[in-house]
View 1 (cartoon, protein in one colour):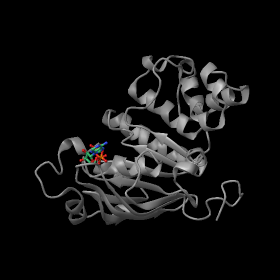
View 2: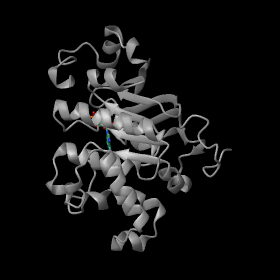
View 3: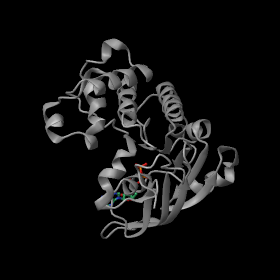
View 4: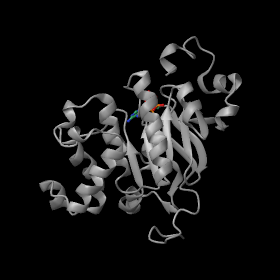
Length: 266
Ligand SMILES: Nc1ncnc2c1ncn2[C@@H]1O[C@H](COP(=O)(O)OP(=O)(O)OP(=O)(O)O)[C@@H](O)[C@H]1O
């Protein structure tokens, strides 16, 4: 089996999801035999309506939800409790609600992304090595945060600025895979476009694959290399954006009245 330390790590698929099944106690099946691989560097959108299982799938990939059946491998290593620390070093996360500490500065939030590699005392004292501070500043500059905001508390930043910080934090460990859960859901349409563009550009630059959940059809078409359509926990479409026909959209979203509501189109 390939180890993370090997220079050739991740020549195989970055992510392999195999027969993933999940149901919550007394609830319906949320993931139903979900299987797919993601190749290095690919920008893959997980497209589905609310409740289709996108968040559950992303949480299962990183081991936050335990699967009832099936497996997840990241760079060939099984995502299991005993491997969790190693796995998380290879994965960056971008959250819908940014997942930042509002009372910490932008730079400190970015450095907190190095948690799996730092001794706990450094995290508690917020005592980050100088090279890490330089790296955080460099990333914040690359994601377009103005220099004057680097040492500002995140609470004082706009939504778009916060998500730039979130992307910089996801990148600080040079991940092979970025998991982004509805990363632009709370942003206005123009900022959503800008942030999606940035996420794609930064991931491509760094050679990271992305699995990004979205419910906006236009954003998926614009930014994805590949779209996986999820409906009621099943994959009902898997292909490039050019193949996302009206019929495929009906499979993903059904034919209900709100299928093509304006809120889906960013
Ligand atoms: N911890 C939980 N306990 C019970 N049911 C849950 C739990 N988490 C999710 N669910 C249920 O699983 C289903 C899928 O939820 P999930 O959040 O994965 O969907 P989603 O596609 O991400 O939706 P959204 O776009 O609204 O975030 C929903 O019916 C939800 O109510």
